[in-house]
Amino acid sequence: MSRRRGRRSKFQEKLARDRINKLLTLINSNRSESNINPQKCITFVKLIGKRYNQRLDKLQKLRFCRSCNSKYDSSNSRFRISKKGWRIVTCLICSERYRFRI
Image (cartoon, rainbow, N blue to C red; front, top):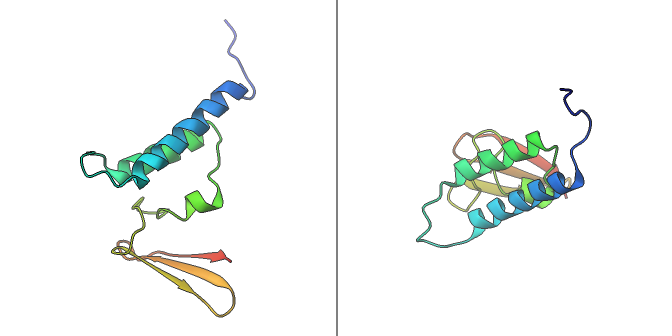
């Protein structure tokens, strides 16, 4: 039997994109009764993105830390805007800094 090579089907790519969006909305929902771990969901988002070659858009990338997978909120991150037009995001858990062009 020969293995299939090449790109994944459009259906698989759309399914992966839907799963990523569903996980990110689950993280952003403020339901207290849900027992989800945001770091685990972000790990799954990254895994799905790698497996199905789906990139996150700019707004989705700004929601969590790349190194420690923690969700940004006011208690564990610092957002600053520099005079030269950069948005500097500092994760207070792992002290990583990320710079984004505004």
